[in-house]
Image (cartoon, rainbow, N blue to C red):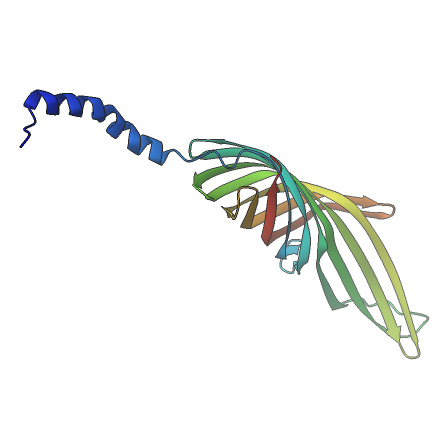
Length: 232
């Protein structure tokens, strides 16, 4: 039977100790799988409101679009920038009888008003900061946003044997901000799926011809799912 001397055991431990210490550190360091340029598509739903005071116009709708960005993976952290272009119809309307007294053509008349609003295009440029767990990434986003906002307003006067409607409409680009967060999972080295929630807030002037509205206040929340394709 062979015996191991204490010197031999000490030598073996001394040789193996650096590898034993390094092994957990190497196991904990994730591979940089989130590096590079990516493009993708997304879709989802939105809800929010437009206006201020006691009776804002409620908004809801569906939307879809494209996104692209670049990110850098270092250790567990991922940093990047992303742009999006999203299209849809996040819309709402408000109608009510108006308390107006004037006569129309010498006859008593009733008056009603209606306002239709919609955000048809949404765009943003935002930063992304994430924490990677191997193929899983959780992230937060924030940046500047724009939307194309349409307003159609009309007043109808109706009486005995007559009806008259006058309307005013216009649209403009509103500038605001967005914040959000989500989670993304790698299905393969080049394909990942995501789900995220973002809040958009716009407070800007709307000017289009004769239509001038100061401090239009629009905000909505968007929930989306999407696919991204890494290009490198």
